[in-house]
Image: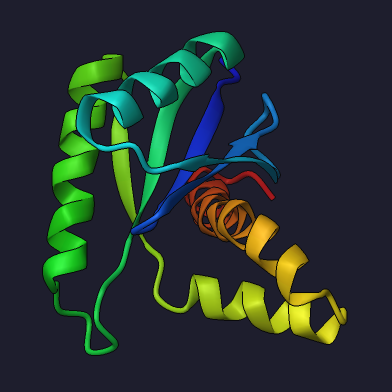
Length: 144
C-alpha cells in the first residue's frame, strides 16, 4: 500500500517539512513552521500529517561528524518520540549530517539571495533528509 511520508528538519528557530509522493519515490519541500515549543509544535505537525494522510514520519538526526550523538541529536530523539506519541504514526530517525550545508551550497550556486535562502533552507533540508531516506528504503525493498 502506498503511503506518504513527512520529512522533518528540526531547527532551533524553525521546523522544515517535506512530504513524499504517495509512492514514496520523491520528496518535495512543503513548508516551514516557526518553533513555538513543545505541544504546540507537535500539534501543528500532527494536523499536517492528518491533512495530508501521512503514514509515517522521518526526523533528521544530527549526528556529529564521527557518528556520535551530541545534545542536538538527543533533542531530535526526544522530539521524535513525542511526535510518535502525538500522531500515533511510526517515526524514524535519519542521519542528516551536512544536509543544511548541502542545501545552502546549492542555493548559493543558484545565486539565491540571503533572504530567499533563509525562507527556503529548512524545508529544502527536510526534503534532502526525506529523499535520502526514500532512496535508501527504495534500494532495500527493490524499488528503483
